[in-house]
Amino acid sequence: MKITTEPQPESKEPRQALQPTLEELSQNARLLIRLRWVAGFGILIGTVFASAALGLDLQIAPLLVIGLGVLAYNTALFFLTHNDIPREGFERIAWGQILLDWVAMIALVHFTGGITSPALIYFVLHAALSGMILLPWQVRRLTVLAILIVGGLAWLERTGWLPHVAIAELDLHNNLHKNTTYIAAVMFFFGSTVFVLSELVTRIVQRLRQREEHIRQLFEARSTFVRVATHELRAPLAAGLSLMKNIEQGYAGELSEQQMALITRVTNRLEGLRTLIDDLLTLAHSREATVAHAPLEPDSVRAVLVKTIERETPNADHKRITLHSDLSNDPGVIMAGPIGLQVILGNLLNNAIKYTPEGGDVRITYRVSRPAHTVEVTIADSGIGIPAADMSSIFSEFFRARNAKETQVTGTGIGLSTVKTLVDRYRGVLTLESEEGRGTTVTVSLPLASKQAPREPL
Image (tube, rainbow, N blue to C red):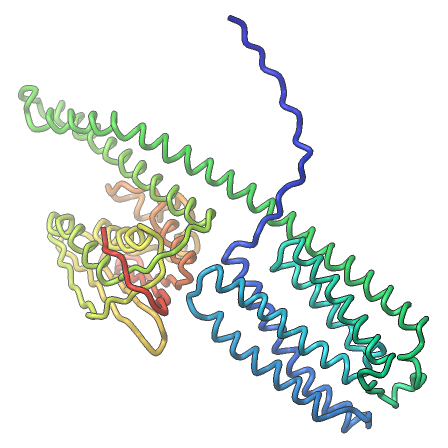
């Protein structure tokens, strides 16, 4: 049998337009809200200044109403976007912003001169900014709609169906809004500018999204490889550790002191390798969830923390370390990944126990602040601490402090890096205070979920 492979021809089909992720959509929606504060106050201040200082004869009352209206609906949008809402909600908010802005811009253009208004530039800027939120075909339709609206406004003023509001101080010809040549020239340059600028912004945004998608796929491939490779290593490693434990316990016959020392060294090395494999799996999971923008679900911090303390208590008892728990009864529901919260709390408590000498203390404090809308977990130990020179690199992947390397404790330097990645993913704050020889205090502050019930902890 003979098999011949041939190169596949490159696809000529255009790449499908990529939608913004929920995170990108929310960030861009909030960016438009910040810019709208500037526009709203700009209309109010500009109207008062132009009328009082420059002496322009403006329609002050309508312009002030427009400015106040922009600030009013922007305030409502501000509070809406600071709640935990699904993607469909952000899409509706995005379209709602655009429609409200266009109503405000039409009124602003009409009351500042219509086709002769300097405020026409707002349509150009808004059509360009919409390219960050909408898909290319939506932006193109929006651009056509902008041209039709401005053209319709000019036609209504030219025919007298809508009274033309002139600004006499600009010294424009009184009948310029009725000049067909002028209207055609403005519409040509306005339309071409809007179309070119919005198309340019849209194409740039699409290319950035395609690159981000390619990077995401590479990260997923890397995470998949790490996950598969480490899973394949786990089985033979577990078998090897089991055999070493059996030999240590004398099932293969009595060992000499030298043989026991060698077996113990091999066992310690295998335990270190198992720790590395477990940390790599955790790191792969955190990276994959972050890059893939995995959806977040409600989770109770208290429930997960109680389970974590129960799981780590035998390790503390083995080293005669006392665990002091001061936990609020509030469930403290946050938005987190499937096992992300367990990884954060498990890593921090395990580190505290691991790097605290025998007979030490570890204190776990859990508080919920409803006014601040946050959950706060603090884990303080009386361990070896972190040298001041190593503090700046403590959250770097595979980094271990100098004094940690000098101990007999196995570690990979992945734990704190993974914790920081997940805390950032959940929009939290991670604070670490340490003094060499005095211990370490780590505080995690996470925003409360606005609503929804937590799932059952694993």
